Length: 241
Image 1 (cartoon, rainbow, N blue to C red):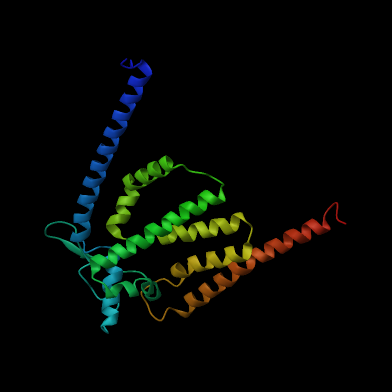
Image 2: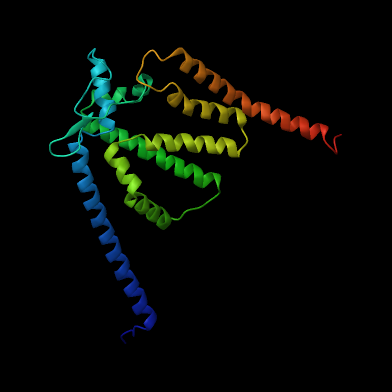
């Protein structure tokens, strides 16, 4: 006898068809978005990553680290272009230095892979810290939403260090959450070093170096100090032994 399909079977079949259609449409949409974005990326010479990359090439050949390059000249229209300079401090370029021995396309792919991997590690760390248990379907949905988000497309075009910053921010959050103040202070001081000493001048101004050193020591000592004060207040307060 032939099995008779009921309303429930029809609904499940319709649901499967709609799901497949949505997945195909989403993949086509992502292909279109990143195809256009790739053209923009190449036209801008892998900017902003290109700024870092070509700056390191200049330094390796004994030239000015901040000399103009194809990645600093940004077209604003068909007839007008402007220089958008690399404003990162010299020590920042050490991150890109090993990649400068590769062609720019391969260097960009490696840089992006590193950032994506660190972003994935950050997500996994947050999941573990909050005792969440995402299913495979949830991971697929999260991945699609992240890929379709405008900030991700902007990250793809600019080649910024978003994954590195995500990992650093997650590290700080976990240390603060676990009240490991010393480690949190080290993480915070490390993250602020780039911005305090930041600038194109080298060697950096003594005042900036002194500020960065003071900030690093303050952040490293603030946590243990606060923890010690909390222990003292607990010990000397009501109900002390």
